[in-house]
Image (cartoon, rainbow over all chains, first blue to last red; front, side, top):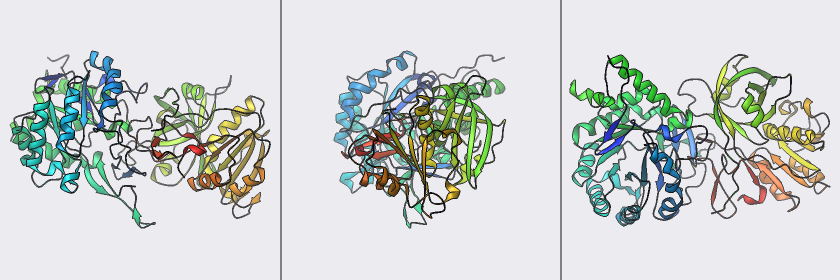
Amino acid sequence: MVTHPSLATTVGSLEFKNPIIAASGTFGYGREYEPSADPRVFGGVALKGTTPKPQAGNPPPRLVETPAGLVNSIGLENPGIAVVIKEKLPQLEDLASAGTRIILNLSADDDNGFVSMAEKCNQASPLDVLELNLSCPNIKAGGMHFGTDPKVVSKITSAVKKATALPIWVKLAPLVTDITVIARSAEDAGADAISLVNTLPALVVDVERQRTVLGNTFGGLSGPAILPFALRQVYMVAQAVKIPVVGMGGISCSDDACAFLLAGASAVQVGTAIFVQPDIAERICDGLSQYLLEKGYEEITDIVGRLAQKD
Amino acid sequence: MAVLHLHTNTARLHTATVEYNHRLKPGLFLLALLNTELATQSLPAQFLTIKVGDTHSPLLRRPFSIFNASKIAGMAPRVEILYKVVGQATRIMSHLKAGDQVSILGPLGKPYPIEGVSPLLIGGGTGIASLHFLARRFLDKLIVPKILFGARTEDELIPLPELGRAEIHLATEDGTVGFAGDVVTLAKEHLPGAHDAVYACGPREMLSALKEVIPSTPPCFISLEETMACGVGACLGCSVQLADGSYATVCRQGPVFRIEELRW
């Protein structure tokens, strides 16, 4: 009989004390939620999307709630990679000591930007993973998202891989013709894991004033509304690649997290739900432990990918 | 980027019990929540976020300025929230009854600095909430604030029985009670007075109009409202533009700003 099921998981060669990771953009640089929530409860925290230079962000309004969802257009407001390495990461030593993995999410408008940040990260600490946000507009390609073109995904991934020894997670935009093609191109180029899904492109209209709500017109939809779609994309990618998958999209309870693990995710990220329940990591971990107990599993890894095994 | 002073974040997740949820006027409610920590720690202009209902709709917590926080011997330690029913979340809140439990995150944000001995407080609509709390704190210090409280019509003006000793001037845009006109026009008659600090809270248009008429001294502190997701400075969703072009979060770097710090 199982009495103390283990929530420990691995993403490639990297161990996580539990599979719950704070998603980039929802947990700042790791300390903002204190003292209302302890960041060390998370298996990992993915820090705010960081760019080569400081970025001011988009004009407000930047947020609007939609049915069971949230549309945001923050515009990657961040102090730039140099400040993050010098001032933000050193504040996270106690997280690292507590076994919470530090994931730095990187965004750039060309491959040189990604490479230069990755090189700077070689001396950064504490830092366990670089997550490449390939959902941002590619300025050189007329604003097309990098993540929609397998050749571009491959080029950026292999360039960053050469520049650093840190594990690289390639974070994919969900709205593409065939997500498995994009995921495989990242895998072939040396990605250590695929993380998905980023927000869905969205538009919200103020009917009374006959204009768009967000200051930057378009935004990204997150929250429970996108979960079934995200789950489908994660399931498809988990079937298509051999490297691990980190799943996310609308997770707000342990059953949601469980669904992603069953669909093949080795770990999951929680974003919008943190806004609603800052202590969500604890709640989900408790729920997952209970699930394992009830089902008689000793380890959370026992359920990863169970869905495909039953096909 | 502008560097704004941050108030030490003392916010915690609380489960609070509803003491009462009074309907003050049509669509205007005063919600009292029993919680010792919130009642003790909250300061004027700080806010709470409330998870309304237990479904995904509404999804995000909703921010509310604190109308009053009191911990008086022999009385229940409570915080009060003044709210207007404007949408789904506040409609659900209007059905809360004594004994119901709600999830609260707070207190959040930077409070008003309490300065001066002759403060002028200018409130529009439910913006009176933070000023009510502030006025109470001034009265506790035996300082009598002058309060200008405006709304569109008498039905939107709530009674302020706990501010008996303060000097209160009312304004309604339709002239149903008090000064006939908006509160900023009324404020012009009181500026410049012998006031050594001005505090204002209300709709953005009101604050923007105030900026046009306010002298550069005394200092004018305003408290802003914005749609927000996290409430703690993590998501950067509630940012407003500062005079230097950079952005500041209303939830963490605000909600209180000096009026001249913002780009209008």
